[in-house]
Image (tube, rainbow, N blue to C red; front, side, top):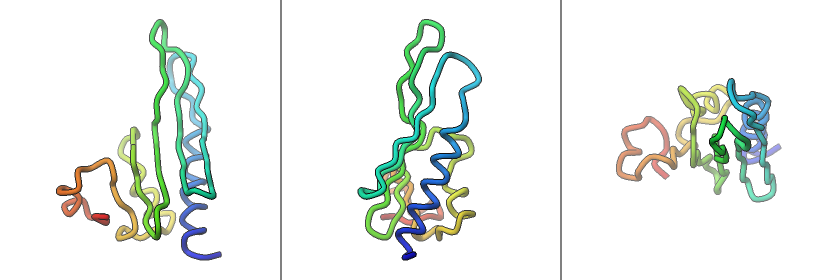
Length: 111
């Protein structure tokens, strides 16, 4: 298995783990959206919390070239460290949700 396939597998495992978690309130489903071929991975919340409609992305990660781009991370404390533990080097993880001029201060890749 090449490096990109290893990265995709690690991201897929993380996405599936988060998709197994149900929000503590409301009638909200959690969905995993995985497009292996295009390197696109998401966790989506869909449902109702009382009278409030819930429809949004909790996690969005793309594998672009040889980098793992975290486009959205609605978790606490964040999924980047989980990806490092899964074997993806910090220099290959981009915090895409951070402005480009601030990425140099994150300890992760800038692009």
